[in-house]
Amino acid sequence: WQAWYTDYTGKKHFFTMDNKRDALQKAHVLEDEHRQIRDGLRPPPDAVKTHMKRPFEEVVQEYLDEGHAHGGRGGRSWGKTHARMRKTHLAWWQKRLGLLSLKDVVGILPYVEKALRELQRQGRAGKTIMNYQEALAALCDWCKRHGYLDKNPLDGLAPFDTTPQTIRRAMTPEEIERLLEACAPHRKLLYQTALLSGLRKNELRNLTIEHLDQQDRGLHLDPAWTKNRKPGFQSLPGWLVEELYAFVQSDEPNQLYARFFNRKGANRYEVPKHPLLYVPSHTARALDADLKAAGIPKHGPGGKIDFHASRTAYINLVLESQGITPKEAQELARHGTLELTMNVYGRVRQGRLAHIVEDVGEFLRPKEAEVVPGLYRQAVGAEQESATPLNNRELHSFKMVEAAGIEPVEIKSTTDTTAPHFAANASQNNALQH
Image 1 (tube, rainbow, N blue to C red):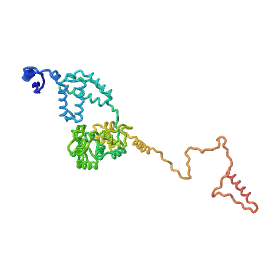
Image 2: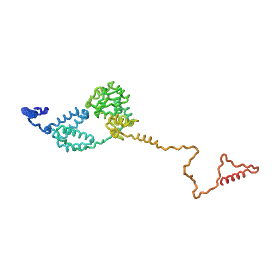
Image 3: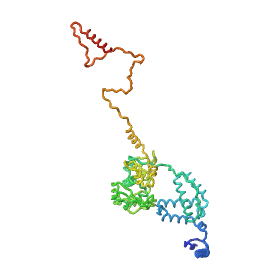
Image 4: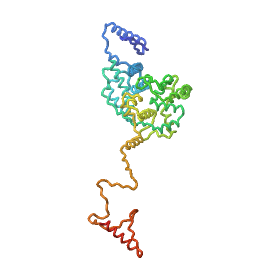
């Protein structure tokens, strides 16, 4: 039999008993005790001891309800993905530790550490393990702030290394071109929008025709589904804005959702009204098939390619643009800090580095000396080389080759012209030697 009573705070509590008479009698007793507390005839009970008896599921549901209402940044609600994962992780902890009431969380620190180490041995990434840890730690901290617990039983829990095991690489312009040529037309438009905006898949899935601005050429971002929970505007190329508008006017996004989201397991995502794009329920599987068709390896030097790698590619295309400032790159990436833009998403392409080095090298490249044909210059201080050793060098007689303008004196003779000719040459040579 189920009975209930209203406590001194005005909240209704339910309980069950096997006997109707006993259930009714207990309800009257509890109702009378709390009425006396409201009237000031009895002191209020210890709040912590009272809440310790509450079922664990009830406390978790209250925590999730507050998160859905105003548990996010700036008093906004949680994102859909965050709320779903937080609920999943808390359900896992309840089953793993056998939590029935709130008092069962007292002294659970060693058991939580053991469970997290088991996840690590199973090969789970550090970030995944921290998501499990943060879910339970956040619940315990929330209970402490609300007076349900004296202290957080997970204080002192050491964090795990969250360094990514795999790194995403930015696709090159050549790979992007091959991917767009190999995929279906509706996925081509999806990839183009992701590569030219840096929007994440859940952000792309929530886009509607109302978010498209043809005049200012861009997308208005709703804080209800952006990761940073802030409104914004993402500029797009004019030709892409026109293609998106034509695509949604053809009603093809609705037709694709009606065709593919009727399958089992595909309806866990809420399809918006008048969607701007069709985003598959399994974007990773669709992208893997398109990469294979384009002949692009998923894993290679520099990391892997997944759907989120399109955001990495977009940010690096922005960084490589000419004339862009670091602040402009940060704004286009919608990052809170420049460090996140440069050191987390920024990549370096070796081919581009080689090109930059060649450009820099042009400033220091030695200039070739202009050589005039037939003219040889001797450096200052240099000596002419001689085949004769220095200690054996002596002045020897030699004959000069006749050249234009230097003719021997011609001696005319009627009897013998050869002898005077050579005699003149010999006397001229001796004169040059002296």
